[in-house]
Image (tube, rainbow, N blue to C red; front, side):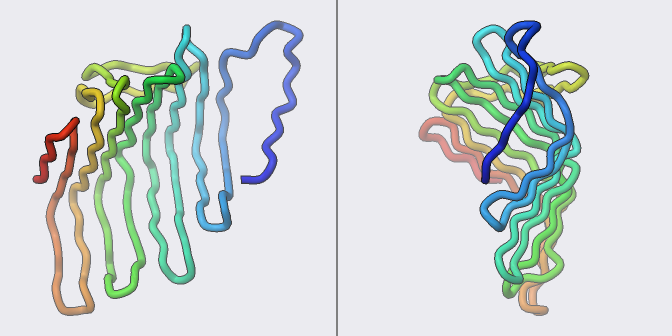
Length: 171
């Protein structure tokens, strides 16, 4: 990421909230765009994104996410985030027609966590955590996955992985 400059007039005091549309090109292979809200609420920082799209591309390989929602909260030591609802497609060597209807990702560090139904709000933006997230959680789920392998084998179905502390669950 190159230089990012925000020119803001702080004559009315400290800025506690920003919302708007973002389009970023990062490190020559990641493009992000969407509607983003950032706010300090007490001692926490909230980041919310709606209609988030991401394209990661290197050579002829690419991974595409569209229409994702994202919610994150941190107080500098705890970190919790969740992304959900993305349309997924990819172009990778040996695999064709890679698609997924939805993608769901959760992450917390040792001090993070969220309650089911907990809602973060920044201006007119909001994000509601779909389910409780315990500390030390990494979770990833895909529904409606399909891929063709070398025009020989078709793969279809739903899959999910999660790790909380030392417990790993694969479905």
